[in-house]
Length: 140
Length: 140
Ligand SMILES: [Co+2]
Ligand SMILES: [Co+2]
Image (cartoon, rainbow over all chains, first blue to last red; front, side):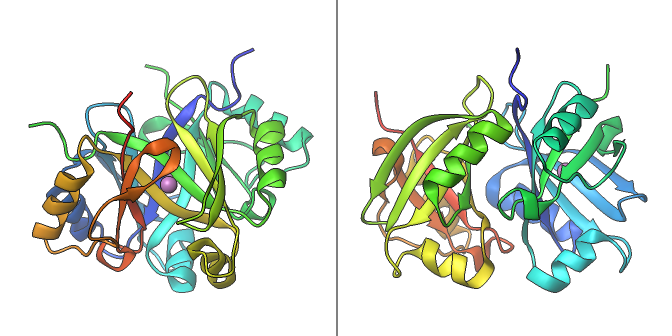
């Protein structure tokens, strides 16, 4: 059986100003912006920053409305790491597996994540204070 | 020129009880413990958990004294993501590069990290609220 979580897909960082954060990660850390989009459902404008030449990404997340989870996170905790996302083969199966182990997922059904991916989240209270995202990549 | 940061080496998570956290990550997320040690200098007992079959790791960090940075983190923020660690070829060169860009590093000289690695940290106030660790692996 393949492992439930195959790799760290990205680390999500809450930022106040997306353009400033992208410029900082480019200039200071030498990362490249490989994707940017607005996800209205999640209330965020976000950019994917490539770490080195491999598949690792830092996801910079800025709120587009006060109701966004990122706006609430910034208000409570300030800028910083907001989520850790793991790649899964099948987000429904992974969510069901974790529910069967007693964890609460944020959504009954997967929602649209970055670049056509499907995502769900484990409630941080059920995962040692970490907001764990499950990401199933879009089929090419 | 190779990129300054070559990959996400690990995500570090502060936990109160290391053994309980290892068991949780094994049972719930299917990760494998591939290393465990006490780092007296950092005041932590820590375990490296492998994500899938690749090189990605979650570092679980529990304090061994009240003076540990992890103890202070737990007191201030509770359990959760405490650091994001990037692999670098040369930790001294990477630290010098970031200092030249105006960032403050926690140490003048690299210190001993996990498994004989050499590490330094960017001050979170200079990196958008993220405690950024630079990790140069031990030479084999
Ligand atoms: Co994400
Ligand atoms: Co570390």
